[in-house]
Image (cartoon, rainbow, N blue to C red; front, side):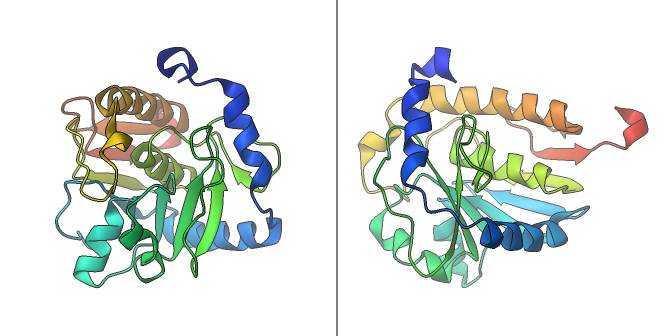
Length: 219
């Protein structure tokens, strides 16, 4: 990401300095997610998703908070930059069990939602074992990479495209340069899938619809 987007690495590292560290809590939360995700079907809901698909584990970027609230369901986890609209940030406790707050140079000082289990992620080398990373670039690819890291048998990406959708954000400025970010995100996701032993299917416009875990003999 650094040569493409021009984000200085030192700022990405510095953002980790204020995160509260609870290694025991982190392990318990990850163990709970892994027990549900390993070998299972995980759905990652993007901004264009309009209904849940009944997967074993249901997750997504911050935009999925709107879907969860409108359907009265609860996501297993959400990945976000803590810049979602205020009405969704304050209601996150009702929409997700776990919130993965991403720490980067542009959101130093932002606060994660209250009354929900919070973990932290980074896209550079983490300072401590309490911070997950490197874990992707945009909210969407982080959610999918985490699903693969948890050992999902299949990851389904629902409602993703290269067209920026901003219904869950209060500020339009948050979407400046979003098309480039989404392009980089799809490349990163495909590289991560290859490295982690997952095969993409139904790839259209750069985004795979399905990531299937390969058997060890197929790699």
